[in-house]
Amino acid sequence: MDIGTTASPGPAMRDTTTAPRGRAMRDSGTAPPLDPAADPVRESMRCLPGPLQLPLTFLTGRPLADQRPVHLTAGVHLATAWLSLLLGLAVSGTGLALGGVFLLLLVPGWAMTLHGQRNLRMMIYHQCSHRNMFGRRRLDTVTGWSVSALLVIQNFERYSREHVADHHAVHHMTLRDPTVQAFLISLDLHPGMTRSRMWRRVLVKCVSPRFHLAFAVSRIRSFWHRAAGPEKAAACLLHGGIAAAAVLTGLWPAVLVAWIVPLGPLYQISNTLRLCVKHTFPAPGTTERRGKEYFASLTNAIFIGEAAPAPGLPVVRAAAGWLRWTLRMLFLHFPCRYLVLTGDTVVHDYHHRHPAARQWPDYLFARQRDLAGGHRGWPAYHAEWGLVAAVNRVFDSLAAADPEEFDVHRIRSVSRRELFAAFDD
Image (tube, rainbow, N blue to C red; front, side, top):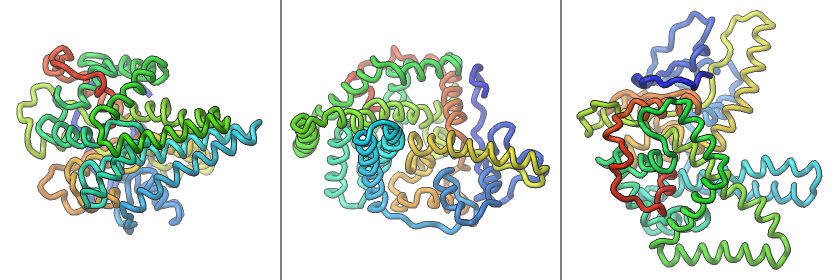
């Protein structure tokens, strides 16, 4: 993987996409499918047994061209997020109680807890901010309050207002957009930097105690400042109750390990990596900053996985290829999907085209239907395969961006209380 050079970002790959470099249906001699709803990488997995196809769709974020949709509801997403969170706490608690080799249970326990937290934030809270979770304003607001109080993130009213006004409007990917401010100030990434330098800076911040402390303090302050009374009361009762119970029972070390580790540093690492794939920066010289063509160019889907081995390989090569593919899907791509690009974040481009779509619970198949139907009124969809490729695309777009337009010194004033809140925008 070459991340050491800066390249000017070309046009994003159209859907259908091509596979990651060196993996695109190699040795097959076949042309990409003509069906606009078909993707050569995903279609290469069609040879696998039928029962694996739905899990592969949710892992990759890309359905097969003719796959039957699975209809989910907002309630299902809310319930599964809470179930993952609670099961993760139970698994971590079991590992801590048994000790010894069972401490290894902390790894899946942390992963399940983090997955639940991220789905609560990235899907539930996000849809509530658009008043699109249940379609009932009061219920969406109360649900949003509960999530912000649990996760200690920017309070619901402030997030809803800024997200819609600055991120989903004419200020999208300008100096007024909190996402841009997070790149330029919090991550200290700027036009002209090489891709490798950006990677180093981000990875160093991910393991920096100072960065995580600043992030945690900012989360608390951005939650508390002007939060609604019920929102503050819920946070005090919840976290105060947990702290009191932990001290009184002597279980505070378990609470720190099982709950605070995923809520603090792990959540913030996931947040940081997710920020790095959300949107590309506009190309220098772009004069038209309105319209569907422009806004669609700033967001692409991110599918997770890689092409399966081509058919017709010799037995030994085929066995080695399938073993490699399986290991990479399980231990490289699955963690990226489960811990970073959770829920509907893989098809964030669909959300920016249709932010109020009532079909959002069926996000994968909703995008697929829009794609197959010719994405009426919008330009072609674009996608990247793989988290690293998606980060590289965003970094390359920032490297090539107009240094005058994205000069950090032109940002007049930004509350440090709110800087890290943009990571979740």
